Length: 334
Image: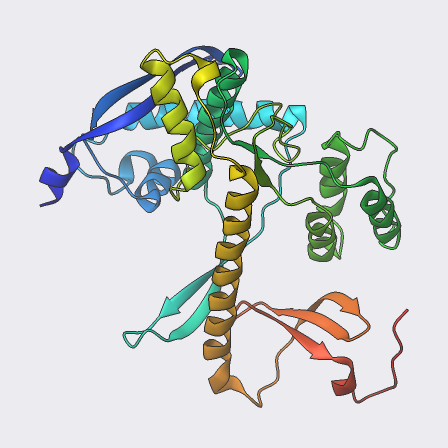
């Protein structure tokens, strides 16, 4: 049953961290192999209910509420520290599908991160940064999660695009993410906020796996690796194997990475993301099929020579309107 599953002993690779209560900074850490025996299991919804309603929340008996309160305080401090150094703060909705018993999607709505999900994210980021810095300090070869700054030429295009919305970009270093956060703040009360945020997001380079430690622009982190991940990926296991070898006394110089691993796993990640995107488009088509012929209000999120990209709010569906379907006038793209 649930209790048996909760109390199973499981092997784990752990990064124990002592964090400063005031600013969430790292004081000391220890990486070790160990055994974890989970005492309780909570859903994100239950944790969010506790944050919203306190003692009135519907929680399992014995829930460590004092620990949750401490975690909440620490996560807030860590998030503020990251934002101060320039970590990007994009908050985009994700598509949450309702699927019927026959496996066909019947609805899709917007879902946003909650304080509970963002809490876990902060601790994961701290573990990933700590392990990456540890491996750099000891010259343990691992795959780093790298996010390059936007190329200079793309930044110039971005400056022009934002100028069309009346936003002015200060001339700061291209590899400093704080200018993007400044634009995100300026866009908060702008009538075209969603389009501006989408333009900023599309200007970003794609994160990848790399054997060299080139930093993470979006997190404003000098060192970053996937040590922990909500979806287990092979690059995480490469980091684990290198750490296990180091813990067993292996010299870092004798630990090696598979040849071409960074390029290979980056390509596999793009393949997986493309498959996920295709399934999402297929599900959206299923949701919209019964609505063919109906009229919807849409938000125009982009224009190109082929037509307009548009988004519906409910159901949450993106699509395109070909320029030849705009019957009211003749349009030419500028």
